[in-house]
Image (cartoon, rainbow, N blue to C red; front, top):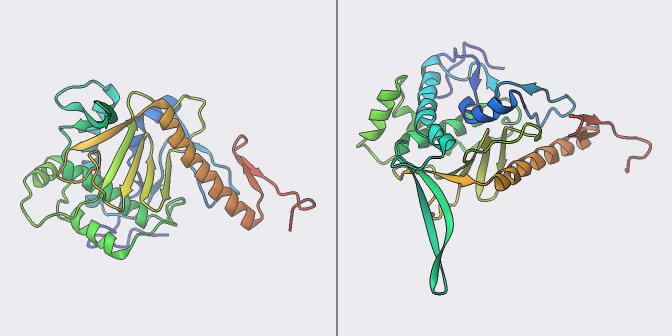
Length: 300
């Protein structure tokens, strides 16, 4: 466990004196918490313990200094001002407009994809926000993040990107990103999915924070938002990276529930694998508690 006498894991200069640092931005689960009040924190490696409902997302002490934590807050504030309200209102305007891709079908064209462009969102600030989330996952010792570590070369690059624009002022960060004329900032490619005006019903089982690495994507479930970091970089009109405009891929309620169910299934698959290996039984999601193994009938 880290202490306040250790060095900040972003700037690597100041003491890590900040407590209660969120691993994923709390604002990304705002609508879900507004409907449900409390959500389940999923501990994928502590399955013998009951997963209790919480009003907050995962937090950890002494990862960063106050300056770096305020910097993360400035990036999150920009998101909450120039992305989130437009998604939640879902009203098309010159600052939030629909982008459609077309495909030829014989003698006519058909729409095969839609995304909303967040015109006021600063692309580099959004990239830095995504990179800050990756860094926070990397340094966290909290389950379920502790098992996911990224290559040193990638983390070094993310730190370099973030430190170029570090400030506690959202206005200063915005101006620095907008007016940047230095060496090109290596991009981080990501898709951003979110339901438009839709949240999960109150009786829906839900995990609001989880990560899943796949062959092509590193998938992050952050409240209502699914962030898919693309490791292959194929060109795609809805792929986000600086300096292209920030785009949100809208999810129908059906697809959103399916994506959340997939994360839910992955969580319980990991949970039961751990419990089987540790001899603690199998997890019953209806009871939110382990079901003991019957040793008399257990297969060898």
